[in-house]
Length: 363
Ligand SMILES: C=CC1=C(C)c2cc3[nH]c(cc4nc(cc5[nH]c(cc1n2)c(C)c5CCC(=O)O)C(CCC(=O)O)=C4C)c(C)c3C=C
Ligand SMILES: [Fe+2]
Ligand SMILES: [Fe+2]
Image (cartoon, rainbow, N blue to C red):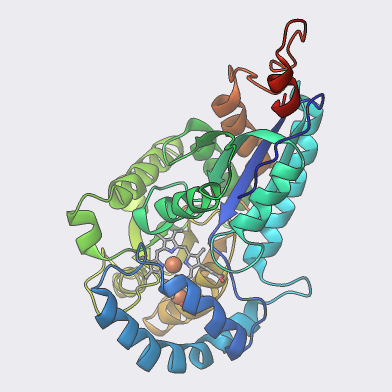
């Protein structure tokens, strides 16, 4: 059991951990297999009877899928690694600088991946070493889902179970309707519009990652969160019903997923004579295989094959100024008024402290 906290005398630090989903370490079948094994073994992600699912996973998914999707990862991979990891890292770096300048007390902003590297456990350990006695965990999922957000909660609390002295802990469960989030999305749409040479903006598709329909029936708020984000974004852009569609992408497995699916939506629009579409994926804080490959490459083909002309993809918030702005506002709101109960309070007036307390005291 780890039992140290910051040695007394050091100022207690606020630790902020941004957590994203995770990505393979390399765009190779072997690395993808390692990543999928961890990801798809999480019972929060696949809610099938364990033995049944593990049989499918080991007999079919892990032997076949990594090779099938490796090309997709190779198409989006950057010199610095997986886009999801690169953007998440850059966002954390920029936030660390910004909040260190702005917040009154010491702060460290860092990032971790729920699956793969850098792990939640290793980053929590580092924050503890740095004296972070207050900890704010920010899963980078605007819309809550048990399959994503709650799984980050599991990873954090599993690590803390091994600590003797746990930090003061706060956890952001969702920010799907936060005005700063909606403003950031609207701002990136407007910037995209200004850069475009077309007079009228094209039909907007708001595409969210899907989840199995059964999860929603059983009480997961994800579908409602996604629709609320879409409505608020449409309102802030003054869009009429016919100007935009809401759809769900990245279906996985045989179960029925929430719909309508993004590719069917694009086919329907093309059949209805829509020539140009603009796609935004508000549920993805950072670009990744699901946006850069599935939307920008695959679904652009789907749209053209159905008779459409151009699909423009609006990049995720990534490490942009508007994302830094949104995150610093969220973090400020969730940490303001957080009392500094700390080791410093425990620096007792030692007069009259019994010898045994003096000897064992961690103060
Ligand atoms: C943004 C929210 C996400 C939800 C909700 C979500 C649910 C969910 N995903 C799968 C299966 C897969 N997802 C994969 C990739 C992936 N998923 C998200 C986000 C959400 N998933 C991100 C950010 C990524 C990208 C990772 C990257 O490396 O770029 C994959 C891996 C790729 C593939 O094999 O197609 C799978 C598998 C399920 C089953 C699920 C809901 C239960
Ligand atoms: Fe996913
Ligand atoms: Fe996918």
